[in-house]
Image 1 (cartoon, chains in turn yellow, cyan):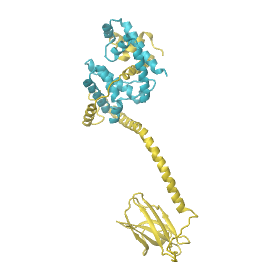
Image 2: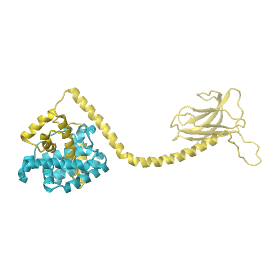
Image 3: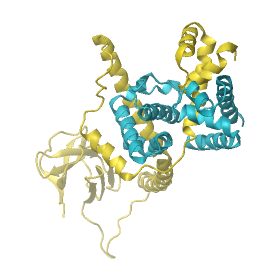
Image 4: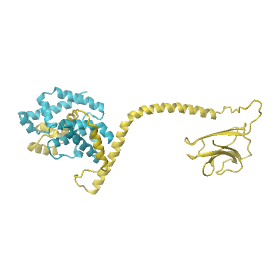
Amino acid sequence: MSVHEPFAEDLALYALGCLEGDERTSLEKHLEECASCRRELEQLRGDAALLALSASGPKPPARAQTRLMDAIAQEPRGQKAENRRPRPQWWAALGWAAAAAMIVVVAVLWNQNVRLKSSVAVLQGLSEQQRLELGQARRVVNTLMAQDAMHIDVMPVGQKALPPQGKAIYSRQNNGLIFMASNLLPLPAQKAYELWIIPTQGAPIPAGVFKPDAHGGAMVINPPIPAGVEAKAFAITIEPEQGSQTPTMPIVMLGAGG
Amino acid sequence: MAQLYARYSSVVYAVALRVLGDTAAAEDVLQEIFIQLWRNPGAFDSGRGNLAPWLAVITRNRAVDSLRKRRPHTEIGETTVSVEPDLAGEADRGRAMEKVRAVLNQMPAAQRSSLEMAYFEGYSHSEIAEKTGEPLGTVKTRIRNGLMLLRKAVETK
Protein backbone atom coordinates (compact mmCIF):
# COMPACT_ATOMS: atom_id res chain seq x y z
CA MET A 1 0.00 0.00 0.00
CA SER A 2 1.25 3.44 -0.85
CA VAL A 3 1.69 5.43 2.34
CA HIS A 4 3.52 8.68 2.56
CA GLU A 5 6.64 7.62 4.41
CA PRO A 6 6.94 10.64 6.72
CA PHE A 7 3.54 9.75 8.14
CA ALA A 8 3.89 5.95 8.25
CA GLU A 9 4.91 5.75 11.90
CA ASP A 10 2.61 8.52 13.03
CA LEU A 11 -0.29 6.69 11.40
CA ALA A 12 0.38 3.65 13.57
CA LEU A 13 0.51 5.78 16.70
CA TYR A 14 -2.64 7.60 15.65
CA ALA A 15 -4.42 4.28 15.12
CA LEU A 16 -3.55 3.33 18.70
CA GLY A 17 -4.68 6.73 19.95
CA CYS A 18 -1.28 7.67 21.34
CA LEU A 19 -0.18 10.40 18.96
CA GLU A 20 -0.46 13.85 20.47
CA GLY A 21 0.52 17.46 20.00
CA ASP A 22 1.68 19.03 16.75
CA GLU A 23 2.34 15.67 15.15
CA ARG A 24 -1.29 14.71 15.64
CA THR A 25 -2.51 18.01 14.22
CA SER A 26 -0.18 17.71 11.27
CA LEU A 27 -1.27 14.14 10.53
CA GLU A 28 -4.97 14.97 10.76
CA LYS A 29 -4.46 17.74 8.25
CA HIS A 30 -2.66 15.36 5.92
CA LEU A 31 -5.39 12.73 6.30
CA GLU A 32 -7.97 15.18 5.04
CA GLU A 33 -6.16 15.24 1.72
CA CYS A 34 -4.67 11.77 1.39
CA ALA A 35 -6.90 8.83 0.56
CA SER A 36 -4.10 6.24 0.66
CA CYS A 37 -3.13 7.27 4.19
CA ARG A 38 -6.81 7.12 5.22
CA ARG A 39 -6.98 3.56 3.88
CA GLU A 40 -3.78 2.63 5.70
CA LEU A 41 -5.16 4.17 8.89
CA GLU A 42 -8.26 2.02 8.58
CA GLN A 43 -6.09 -1.06 8.21
CA LEU A 44 -3.93 -0.06 11.15
CA ARG A 45 -7.06 0.31 13.25
CA GLY A 46 -7.95 -3.24 12.26
CA ASP A 47 -4.47 -4.31 13.37
CA ALA A 48 -5.03 -2.52 16.67
CA ALA A 49 -8.33 -4.40 17.04
CA LEU A 50 -6.32 -7.64 16.89
CA LEU A 51 -4.36 -6.36 19.84
CA ALA A 52 -7.59 -5.63 21.71
CA LEU A 53 -9.01 -9.06 20.88
CA SER A 54 -5.83 -10.73 22.12
CA ALA A 55 -6.85 -9.84 25.68
CA SER A 56 -8.01 -12.92 27.51
CA GLY A 57 -9.27 -13.49 31.00
CA PRO A 58 -12.07 -14.88 33.13
CA LYS A 59 -15.71 -14.60 32.16
CA PRO A 60 -17.64 -11.77 33.79
CA PRO A 61 -19.39 -12.75 37.03
CA ALA A 62 -23.06 -13.69 36.83
CA ARG A 63 -24.03 -10.60 38.80
CA ALA A 64 -22.86 -8.42 35.88
CA GLN A 65 -25.55 -9.88 33.62
CA THR A 66 -28.22 -9.49 36.27
CA ARG A 67 -27.19 -5.89 36.76
CA LEU A 68 -27.28 -5.22 33.03
CA MET A 69 -30.69 -6.80 32.53
CA ASP A 70 -32.08 -4.86 35.48
CA ALA A 71 -30.76 -1.62 34.00
CA ILE A 72 -32.16 -2.41 30.55
CA ALA A 73 -35.55 -3.26 31.99
CA GLN A 74 -35.76 0.24 33.39
CA GLU A 75 -35.32 2.12 30.17
CA PRO A 76 -37.06 2.13 26.81
CA ARG A 77 -35.25 0.53 23.95
CA GLY A 78 -33.60 2.66 21.29
CA GLN A 79 -33.31 5.73 23.50
CA LYS A 80 -30.27 7.60 22.34
CA ALA A 81 -27.64 9.06 24.57
CA GLU A 82 -28.68 12.50 25.79
CA ASN A 83 -25.51 14.22 24.67
CA ARG A 84 -25.85 13.47 20.99
CA ARG A 85 -25.65 16.36 18.65
CA PRO A 86 -29.01 17.88 17.68
CA ARG A 87 -29.92 17.20 14.08
CA PRO A 88 -32.69 18.36 11.79
CA GLN A 89 -35.98 16.52 12.32
CA TRP A 90 -35.83 14.45 9.16
CA TRP A 91 -32.29 13.33 9.90
CA ALA A 92 -33.49 12.17 13.27
CA ALA A 93 -36.31 10.24 11.63
CA LEU A 94 -33.85 8.71 9.18
CA GLY A 95 -31.56 7.77 12.02
CA TRP A 96 -34.39 6.17 13.92
CA ALA A 97 -35.48 4.28 10.83
CA ALA A 98 -31.93 3.02 10.30
CA ALA A 99 -31.66 2.09 13.96
CA ALA A 100 -34.99 0.30 13.86
CA ALA A 101 -33.97 -1.54 10.71
CA MET A 102 -30.69 -2.46 12.34
CA ILE A 103 -32.48 -3.77 15.41
CA VAL A 104 -34.61 -5.98 13.24
CA VAL A 105 -31.72 -7.18 11.09
CA VAL A 106 -29.41 -7.82 14.02
CA ALA A 107 -32.13 -9.51 16.05
CA VAL A 108 -33.21 -11.73 13.17
CA LEU A 109 -29.72 -12.66 12.02
CA TRP A 110 -28.43 -13.39 15.46
CA ASN A 111 -31.46 -15.27 16.48
CA GLN A 112 -31.20 -17.36 13.34
CA ASN A 113 -27.51 -17.84 13.69
CA VAL A 114 -27.76 -19.10 17.25
CA ARG A 115 -30.75 -21.31 16.62
CA LEU A 116 -30.01 -22.62 13.17
CA LYS A 117 -27.33 -25.06 14.21
CA SER A 118 -29.46 -26.72 16.85
CA SER A 119 -32.52 -26.55 14.61
CA VAL A 120 -30.81 -28.37 11.77
CA ALA A 121 -30.42 -31.56 13.78
CA VAL A 122 -33.99 -31.36 15.04
CA LEU A 123 -35.33 -30.67 11.56
CA GLN A 124 -33.41 -33.56 10.10
CA GLY A 125 -35.03 -35.86 12.65
CA LEU A 126 -38.45 -34.39 12.00
CA SER A 127 -37.98 -34.61 8.28
CA GLU A 128 -37.20 -38.31 8.47
CA GLN A 129 -40.18 -38.91 10.77
CA GLN A 130 -42.48 -36.96 8.45
CA ARG A 131 -41.17 -38.83 5.45
CA LEU A 132 -42.07 -42.15 7.07
CA GLU A 133 -45.48 -40.89 8.19
CA LEU A 134 -46.20 -39.47 4.76
CA GLY A 135 -45.30 -42.75 3.11
CA GLN A 136 -47.62 -44.62 5.45
CA ALA A 137 -50.47 -42.13 4.92
CA ARG A 138 -50.00 -42.33 1.17
CA ARG A 139 -50.30 -46.10 1.24
CA VAL A 140 -53.55 -45.88 3.23
CA VAL A 141 -55.08 -43.37 0.83
CA ASN A 142 -53.86 -45.24 -2.24
CA THR A 143 -55.45 -48.43 -0.97
CA LEU A 144 -58.74 -46.70 -0.21
CA MET A 145 -58.85 -44.97 -3.58
CA ALA A 146 -57.42 -47.73 -5.76
CA GLN A 147 -59.41 -48.74 -8.81
CA ASP A 148 -58.89 -52.38 -7.96
CA ALA A 149 -59.75 -51.98 -4.28
CA MET A 150 -62.17 -54.66 -3.14
CA HIS A 151 -64.91 -53.44 -0.75
CA ILE A 152 -66.17 -56.50 1.01
CA ASP A 153 -68.69 -56.58 3.85
CA VAL A 154 -67.82 -59.26 6.33
CA MET A 155 -70.90 -60.50 8.18
CA PRO A 156 -72.07 -63.45 10.23
CA VAL A 157 -72.16 -66.70 8.22
CA GLY A 158 -75.62 -67.37 6.84
CA GLN A 159 -76.76 -63.74 6.82
CA LYS A 160 -77.67 -62.73 3.31
CA ALA A 161 -77.44 -58.97 3.34
CA LEU A 162 -76.76 -56.08 5.67
CA PRO A 163 -78.78 -52.87 5.82
CA PRO A 164 -77.23 -49.64 4.56
CA GLN A 165 -74.56 -48.46 6.95
CA GLY A 166 -71.72 -45.99 7.10
CA LYS A 167 -68.81 -45.07 9.32
CA ALA A 168 -67.61 -41.51 9.78
CA ILE A 169 -64.16 -40.95 11.23
CA TYR A 170 -63.75 -37.31 12.21
CA SER A 171 -60.86 -35.48 13.87
CA ARG A 172 -61.61 -31.93 14.93
CA GLN A 173 -57.97 -31.32 15.79
CA ASN A 174 -56.75 -32.42 12.35
CA ASN A 175 -59.81 -31.04 10.55
CA GLY A 176 -60.09 -34.39 8.82
CA LEU A 177 -63.14 -36.47 7.93
CA ILE A 178 -63.35 -39.88 6.32
CA PHE A 179 -66.71 -41.46 5.59
CA MET A 180 -67.20 -44.98 4.25
CA ALA A 181 -70.59 -46.49 3.46
CA SER A 182 -71.80 -49.81 2.22
CA ASN A 183 -75.05 -51.38 1.06
CA LEU A 184 -76.48 -48.01 0.15
CA LEU A 185 -79.74 -48.11 -1.76
CA PRO A 186 -79.75 -46.94 -5.38
CA LEU A 187 -80.64 -43.26 -5.86
CA PRO A 188 -83.38 -41.72 -7.98
CA ALA A 189 -82.19 -40.02 -11.18
CA GLN A 190 -80.32 -36.73 -10.75
CA LYS A 191 -80.03 -37.27 -7.00
CA ALA A 192 -77.04 -37.87 -4.75
CA TYR A 193 -76.35 -38.60 -1.13
CA GLU A 194 -75.00 -35.73 0.93
CA LEU A 195 -73.08 -36.09 4.18
CA TRP A 196 -73.73 -33.54 6.96
CA ILE A 197 -71.89 -32.66 10.10
CA ILE A 198 -74.38 -31.85 12.86
CA PRO A 199 -72.45 -29.46 15.11
CA THR A 200 -73.09 -28.97 18.81
CA GLN A 201 -74.15 -25.43 17.95
CA GLY A 202 -75.58 -24.04 14.74
CA ALA A 203 -76.94 -25.43 11.50
CA PRO A 204 -75.83 -28.66 9.78
CA ILE A 205 -72.65 -28.27 7.72
CA PRO A 206 -72.43 -29.90 4.25
CA ALA A 207 -69.56 -32.39 4.16
CA GLY A 208 -69.55 -33.90 0.71
CA VAL A 209 -71.85 -35.18 -2.02
CA PHE A 210 -71.45 -38.77 -3.21
CA LYS A 211 -73.09 -41.56 -5.18
CA PRO A 212 -72.77 -45.25 -4.33
CA ASP A 213 -71.07 -47.64 -6.71
CA ALA A 214 -72.79 -50.70 -8.21
CA HIS A 215 -72.38 -52.58 -4.93
CA GLY A 216 -73.76 -49.78 -2.74
CA GLY A 217 -70.34 -48.68 -1.53
CA ALA A 218 -69.19 -45.05 -1.27
CA MET A 219 -66.44 -43.03 0.29
CA VAL A 220 -65.82 -39.39 1.18
CA ILE A 221 -62.29 -38.42 2.16
CA ASN A 222 -61.44 -35.05 3.68
CA PRO A 223 -64.18 -32.89 2.17
CA PRO A 224 -63.74 -29.12 2.53
CA ILE A 225 -65.18 -28.27 5.95
CA PRO A 226 -64.69 -25.38 8.36
CA ALA A 227 -61.90 -25.83 10.92
CA GLY A 228 -62.55 -26.63 14.54
CA VAL A 229 -66.16 -27.73 14.28
CA GLU A 230 -67.33 -29.65 17.32
CA ALA A 231 -69.52 -32.42 15.88
CA LYS A 232 -72.23 -34.22 17.79
CA ALA A 233 -73.59 -36.32 14.89
CA PHE A 234 -73.31 -37.12 11.18
CA ALA A 235 -76.27 -37.47 8.87
CA ILE A 236 -77.04 -38.48 5.27
CA THR A 237 -79.78 -36.97 3.14
CA ILE A 238 -80.73 -37.30 -0.49
CA GLU A 239 -80.12 -34.07 -2.40
CA PRO A 240 -79.88 -32.80 -5.98
CA GLU A 241 -76.65 -33.98 -7.68
CA GLN A 242 -74.92 -30.67 -7.10
CA GLY A 243 -75.62 -30.83 -3.36
CA SER A 244 -77.43 -28.43 -1.02
CA GLN A 245 -76.50 -25.94 1.63
CA THR A 246 -79.30 -27.08 3.92
CA PRO A 247 -80.41 -30.68 4.33
CA THR A 248 -83.58 -31.87 2.65
CA MET A 249 -85.68 -34.01 4.91
CA PRO A 250 -85.92 -36.84 5.62
CA ILE A 251 -82.56 -37.86 7.07
CA VAL A 252 -81.92 -41.31 5.65
CA MET A 253 -78.96 -42.24 7.87
CA LEU A 254 -77.83 -40.78 11.21
CA GLY A 255 -75.09 -41.49 13.66
CA ALA A 256 -74.24 -39.63 16.88
CA GLY A 257 -70.81 -39.28 18.44
CA GLY A 258 -70.01 -41.23 21.59
CA MET B 1 -29.64 -8.62 24.16
CA ALA B 2 -29.28 -11.74 26.29
CA GLN B 3 -27.86 -13.60 23.31
CA LEU B 4 -25.53 -10.75 22.46
CA TYR B 5 -24.36 -10.69 26.03
CA ALA B 6 -23.85 -14.44 26.15
CA ARG B 7 -21.74 -14.32 23.04
CA TYR B 8 -19.67 -11.20 23.51
CA SER B 9 -19.53 -10.31 27.21
CA SER B 10 -16.32 -12.33 27.60
CA VAL B 11 -14.58 -10.27 24.91
CA VAL B 12 -15.72 -6.98 26.43
CA TYR B 13 -14.89 -7.99 29.98
CA ALA B 14 -11.46 -9.35 29.05
CA VAL B 15 -10.48 -6.11 27.29
CA ALA B 16 -11.83 -3.94 30.10
CA LEU B 17 -10.05 -6.03 32.72
CA ARG B 18 -6.82 -5.98 30.69
CA VAL B 19 -6.88 -2.19 30.62
CA LEU B 20 -8.21 -1.45 34.09
CA GLY B 21 -6.85 -4.39 36.09
CA ASP B 22 -9.79 -4.12 38.43
CA THR B 23 -12.85 -6.35 38.29
CA ALA B 24 -15.32 -3.77 39.63
CA ALA B 25 -14.16 -1.12 37.16
CA ALA B 26 -14.22 -3.71 34.35
CA GLU B 27 -17.81 -4.61 35.24
CA ASP B 28 -18.73 -0.92 35.07
CA VAL B 29 -17.30 -0.65 31.57
CA LEU B 30 -18.98 -3.90 30.55
CA GLN B 31 -22.29 -2.49 31.74
CA GLU B 32 -21.71 0.80 29.98
CA ILE B 33 -20.82 -0.81 26.65
CA PHE B 34 -23.89 -3.04 26.52
CA ILE B 35 -26.19 -0.23 27.68
CA GLN B 36 -24.79 1.94 24.88
CA LEU B 37 -25.42 -0.86 22.40
CA TRP B 38 -28.96 -1.26 23.71
CA ARG B 39 -29.67 2.45 23.46
CA ASN B 40 -28.09 2.85 20.08
CA PRO B 41 -27.97 -0.45 18.17
CA GLY B 42 -27.46 1.44 14.91
CA ALA B 43 -24.04 2.52 16.15
CA PHE B 44 -22.58 -0.72 14.86
CA ASP B 45 -22.19 -0.63 11.10
CA SER B 46 -22.23 -4.28 10.03
CA GLY B 47 -21.15 -3.24 6.55
CA ARG B 48 -17.77 -2.18 7.89
CA GLY B 49 -16.65 -5.12 9.93
CA ASN B 50 -17.96 -7.56 12.44
CA LEU B 51 -19.07 -7.15 15.99
CA ALA B 52 -16.33 -8.75 18.08
CA PRO B 53 -13.43 -6.49 16.96
CA TRP B 54 -15.69 -3.47 17.09
CA LEU B 55 -16.76 -4.24 20.65
CA ALA B 56 -13.15 -4.90 21.63
CA VAL B 57 -12.06 -1.52 20.27
CA ILE B 58 -14.87 0.56 21.78
CA THR B 59 -14.31 -1.24 25.08
CA ARG B 60 -10.61 -0.47 24.95
CA ASN B 61 -11.34 3.19 24.17
CA ARG B 62 -13.87 3.51 26.97
CA ALA B 63 -11.65 1.69 29.46
CA VAL B 64 -8.63 3.85 28.61
CA ASP B 65 -10.77 6.96 28.99
CA SER B 66 -11.81 5.66 32.39
CA LEU B 67 -8.22 4.81 33.31
CA ARG B 68 -6.96 8.21 32.31
CA LYS B 69 -9.93 9.81 34.04
CA ARG B 70 -10.99 11.72 31.00
CA ARG B 71 -14.26 12.23 29.25
CA PRO B 72 -15.07 9.73 26.49
CA HIS B 73 -13.20 10.77 23.38
CA THR B 74 -15.53 9.36 20.79
CA GLU B 75 -19.13 8.25 20.46
CA ILE B 76 -19.36 4.53 19.84
CA GLY B 77 -21.17 5.19 16.59
CA GLU B 78 -18.15 7.04 15.28
CA THR B 79 -15.85 4.05 15.73
CA THR B 80 -15.37 1.76 12.76
CA VAL B 81 -13.15 -1.28 12.73
CA SER B 82 -12.35 -3.30 9.67
CA VAL B 83 -10.29 -6.43 10.22
CA GLU B 84 -8.89 -8.59 7.46
CA PRO B 85 -9.35 -11.50 7.27
CA ASP B 86 -12.94 -11.58 8.41
CA LEU B 87 -13.22 -12.76 12.02
CA ALA B 88 -16.97 -13.19 12.23
CA GLY B 89 -16.82 -16.83 13.24
CA GLU B 90 -15.68 -17.78 16.70
CA ALA B 91 -13.44 -20.50 15.28
CA ASP B 92 -11.75 -18.05 12.88
CA ARG B 93 -11.34 -15.57 15.68
CA GLY B 94 -9.88 -18.21 17.97
CA ARG B 95 -7.31 -19.26 15.37
CA ALA B 96 -6.37 -15.65 14.62
CA MET B 97 -5.96 -14.86 18.31
CA GLU B 98 -3.68 -17.85 18.78
CA LYS B 99 -1.44 -16.44 16.07
CA VAL B 100 -1.58 -12.92 17.51
CA ARG B 101 -0.70 -14.14 21.01
CA ALA B 102 2.13 -16.23 19.60
CA VAL B 103 3.55 -13.18 17.82
CA LEU B 104 3.22 -11.09 20.97
CA ASN B 105 5.01 -13.77 23.00
CA GLN B 106 7.88 -13.90 20.51
CA MET B 107 8.17 -10.12 20.26
CA PRO B 108 11.13 -8.42 21.95
CA ALA B 109 10.03 -7.32 25.41
CA ALA B 110 10.67 -3.63 24.75
CA GLN B 111 8.57 -3.70 21.59
CA ARG B 112 5.70 -5.55 23.22
CA SER B 113 5.83 -3.22 26.18
CA SER B 114 5.66 -0.14 23.94
CA LEU B 115 2.65 -1.55 22.13
CA GLU B 116 0.87 -2.43 25.34
CA MET B 117 1.66 0.87 27.03
CA ALA B 118 0.20 2.67 24.05
CA TYR B 119 -2.87 0.54 23.57
CA PHE B 120 -3.82 -0.92 26.93
CA GLU B 121 -2.47 1.77 29.22
CA GLY B 122 -3.33 4.78 27.09
CA TYR B 123 0.08 6.47 27.23
CA SER B 124 1.06 8.91 24.53
CA HIS B 125 4.17 8.25 22.50
CA SER B 126 6.09 10.95 24.34
CA GLU B 127 5.04 9.50 27.70
CA ILE B 128 6.24 6.07 26.60
CA ALA B 129 9.59 7.55 25.51
CA GLU B 130 9.89 9.29 28.84
CA LYS B 131 8.99 6.19 30.88
CA THR B 132 11.23 3.82 28.95
CA GLY B 133 14.07 6.28 28.42
CA GLU B 134 14.07 5.43 24.72
CA PRO B 135 14.29 8.00 21.92
CA LEU B 136 10.92 9.05 20.53
CA GLY B 137 11.80 7.73 17.08
CA THR B 138 12.63 4.31 18.49
CA VAL B 139 9.29 4.12 20.26
CA LYS B 140 7.46 5.07 17.09
CA THR B 141 9.31 2.49 15.00
CA ARG B 142 8.72 -0.25 17.54
CA ILE B 143 5.02 0.44 17.68
CA ARG B 144 4.55 0.51 13.92
CA ASN B 145 6.64 -2.62 13.37
CA GLY B 146 4.73 -4.35 16.16
CA LEU B 147 1.40 -3.64 14.46
CA MET B 148 2.81 -4.86 11.15
CA LEU B 149 3.83 -8.14 12.79
CA LEU B 150 0.28 -8.63 14.06
CA ARG B 151 -1.10 -7.95 10.60
CA LYS B 152 1.24 -10.48 9.02
CA ALA B 153 0.34 -13.05 11.66
CA VAL B 154 -3.33 -13.15 10.67
CA GLU B 155 -2.64 -12.77 6.96
CA THR B 156 -0.47 -15.91 7.03
CA LYS B 157 -2.53 -19.04 6.44
